[in-house]
Image 1 (tube, rainbow, N blue to C red):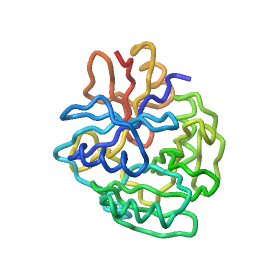
Image 2: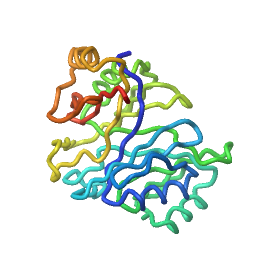
Image 3: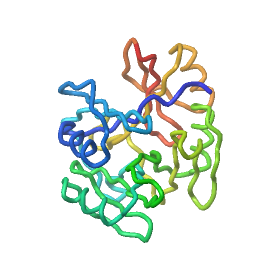
Amino acid sequence: MIGKLDMVVIDAPDIGRLSDFYSRLAGWTQSDTSADWITLTTDDGWCIGLQRAPDHLPPQWPDQARPQQAHLDLRVPDLATATAKAVDLGATLLRENETWHTLADPVRHPFDLCLKADDPRTTLMGVTLDCPDATELSAFYAQLLGKPVTYDADGMAMIGSDGDHPVLFQQVANYTPPQWPDPARPQQFHLDVMVDDLDAGEEAARSIGATRLAGGGKTFRVFADPASKPFCLTTGD
């Protein structure tokens, strides 16, 4: 393990609206509020950061010209009820399947509502990253985060286990990577990874295929994974 998954960060032009949406839909708790940042904490221990991006270009799912790059998977006890609630709060229904529905939140980030009838709560199952090769990217993040690859088949992969904040990987045809920090090719999502030491963390991350990007500060550095998705190493100080 090089670092620990600290936070899933979502870019949005109106973080207040997005915070209100997920707080009311899933019961997430808001903290660390400022004009440019809001932290949301889930009942099952996930930490979601909302980062203000005033020039944000939203995804146009499923168009790879304006790709989603990543999405959240929420579990709900009743799909019809949860979908109706989400739509009432400002979401848009994009697709219906027997056991999951795809919607776009009020700033047009897609997310999935997945049926889990034996649990009365709305929980966050995981975050899914789009990529050109699910096997390759899951192997990279398995080393970065110290989570084993627990599934790899049919263009999908997962590291970690259910209930242990898994990260999933979805293979996408004609994958279009972000080109950070170009607002015309936005990252949409990124992961913050906590390390004890930035120099040691950078050396280790680069040794498994990460690329250092411009930007950063005293407490964080920006990198790209093998699919050109940005992520940050941070000390959290």
